[in-house]
Image (cartoon, rainbow, N blue to C red):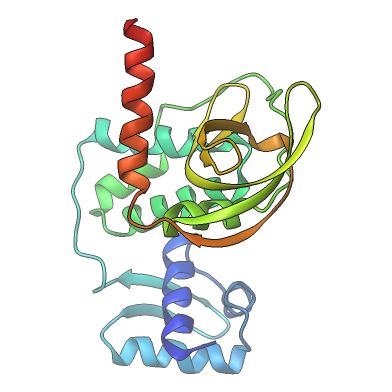
Length: 231
């Protein structure tokens, strides 16, 4: 792992985990040896990051020069926590984890009083046990294809149980109350299709780039939906 990547990962862990964090836990989370961890802690301190503690006592990030101070009203803090907490109900573990990490970074920039408010919010997100179908495909691959505007080959089982394999241009994901769907421009049908992600059997990179057309295609799809609704 590159040195800069190691230091960034270490900073993320220090922001995210409750302090003080033991050297053993830090080494495990960052996937490095304890000896390397001690060197990286020294490097961060030399760069101006204030980290209290020592080996055997745990470490606390007390000042983070990489994150400028932030300020939010109490209701803004509640809204952020509520929104991020609701990610758990979507059935996407990576997305929920990313939300928690982002919230930890936000809390690290808040004044002490607001940080305490963020740790003890009164609003919670709750819903009955989820009945959405299980998604088994690699969601990181799907998200990356959307971001990078590259095609995907998918094997798909439609609602009539017909199976096809097709290349699509993935445009976006929609987390509905009962299903996760992928909007794509189907190259087989040359039309927009909504695919239930739980019905995608296999997915692999297609290698075709459609950059920079994703935003244009999304606007075209939305316009066609509104036009259909008005008729």
